[in-house]
Amino acid sequence: MTMIEKLAMNMAMEVKAARSRMKSVIGWLPFLYVLILFHICSCVKQQQQIFCCQETEMVNTF
Image 1 (cartoon, rainbow, N blue to C red):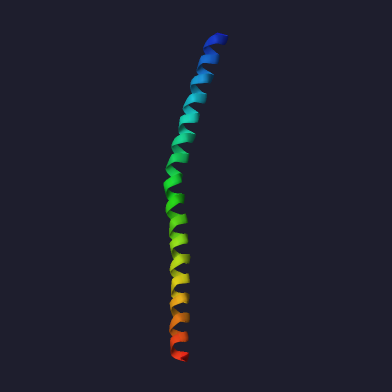
Image 2 (cartoon, rainbow, N blue to C red; image 1 turned 90 degrees about the vertical axis):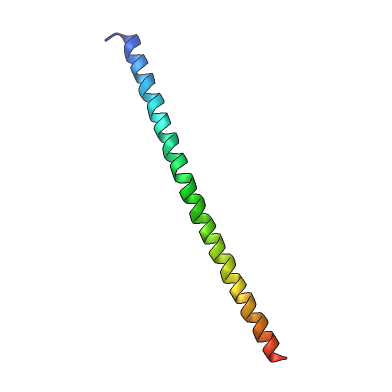
């Protein structure tokens, strides 16, 4: 195998590895996005419940 063939094969392997990494990152991004949204929505819902409880307590004290 000549040096040019080795370089061509090495370059092809690097391109294939780069595509694989891109697919992996693209595959993980939606998963992380959903997890982050779920966490944010849970925090917001918790804050709303706390706020509603505080309002009802204030109404009951008057």
